[in-house]
Length: 279
Image (cartoon, rainbow, N blue to C red; front, top):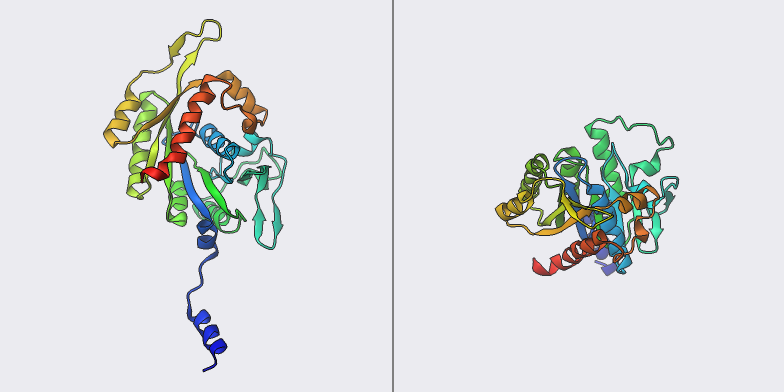
């Protein structure tokens, strides 16, 4: 048999790699940012993690996995932009040369219109974000998950198949910690390595005298970390300046050494970058 004919037949018989698998294969590290409940600053952590990784020179994609409450485009000042489509698929919106973003909010014309979708529609959208978005070659894909352990986190974990790690965000109060323990258990059940816990809103620093004031009871985050044998990556204070930066859409311009918050967050970023060396 002619060698060219044989080669053609071999190619036809060989199972074709799916577009989703090929897309994910081009990404070195897939990181989920999750929380047990809403209102703990998970999207703030995801957005700043992506931005600081990009500033370090890594090629980064940020996927806003929250279908009902997307907030990532607002933080980067791109809520009025729309993704383009080329021969490779949907082109995510570029924030900088090293950072691109995809969110359902970028596809909705009316910002005030709620997304009223049942599970199957949400799952289809998430699959399209992973399969049809032209992410290209990335060092990191950061996925900002909606709070809890429902459809979206489960679908993303199953579709990506091999997630390199999860960052779990919580606040110190007991109600949040009950949920964060479930998030860690969820990650373990799906065989997703937990990089560590981020304690957000740990204290508030008085702008007049620099006194540190505990907003919630202390010790719960450290206990949860010890119980599950995962590290606490950092304790972030409340910082009104950060809220101003997010509201103005300038997360990517935050100076890593400008405040105690950003200096503490740099430690978190370094832990994420170094995590692959430990596993």
